[in-house]
Image (cartoon, rainbow, N blue to C red; front, side):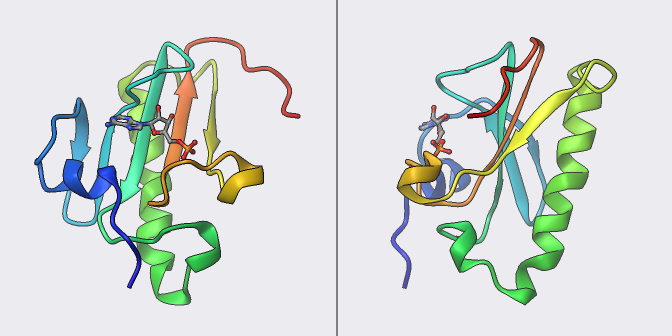
Length: 114
Ligand code: AMP
């Protein structure tokens, strides 16, 4: 059984977050330490710790996260200029919260990735 993170508490509304989207399978909220004018985290409500744990049955929710990301990009007015979607995995990928999440970042020009 995977260990819960702070994101499970946000899903259950046990700790506050600036929630910008919610449905049965996905939650999105503003990052507490934004790296861009728009920085939103999109997470599945089910606990998938990392991309390494993704299973074929997760395809629907993971695909849905992209639909939500595109909608939030439009809602935040960054769709035309562009934005970055990032999913970090484990330590060398820069992951610190082990509940899979997609970063939606925009509102400024992104650096080249390194
Ligand atoms: P990662 O490095 O990909 O695991 O990203 C984790 C992200 O979660 C970081 O950008 C943090 O700023 C963000 N974060 C951690 N705790 C919270 C929280 N309570 N509310 C919103 N964002 C958070």
